[in-house]
Image (cartoon, rainbow, N blue to C red):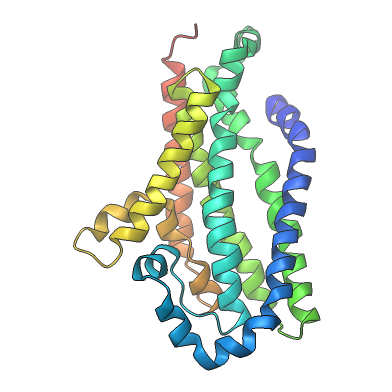
Length: 264
């Protein structure tokens, strides 16, 4: 069981470590530069935020830059995790099925006694490798870095923001998986996944507080809020449950779609 997941997972290990190092370096840079600005933020935080266009404040949900938690929420978790890492997982997932179909490897795989739905499910499971590794390595760097600049962050909040990002990243990967079975060319599937994921981020951000806010309920970004965790110490477990349900729906949809698709 899970031979495909183990095989693909092993081949994702090196890339996952590189990804973890890159995001850890981003965390180090954000933490390192914070003391240079913290004094200015404490005095003029409100004026500083007012200098940003209202659309930017709403788009990135910037609440404060006067604390390391607020600085990290914007610079690392909203930009680095919600946007960049979410897009990366959608892109990575979009190449899983479409890439094998395009290269002719899927025909060989399906010639073995394995169902199409199992193939899709196990390839999706292999994405747990980058998702878990990056969320194990980076929080250690964040916590230690904050202590080193004498701006400690509660360890529970650091663990929570990374733990609750896992269902969010799986949901983004689910979007990519559906794109991967919808088309049989990896490049098209990847562009489709990037466009849909970023479009959902824009939809949720720009419709927040408007009469059409309910439409944003389809966006995974609604259910993962780094500001809420780091600034308020509030953990949205219901939102995490919604993301798990969203991931299951996307996975099942991808399995059903692929089971009824002709491979050319």
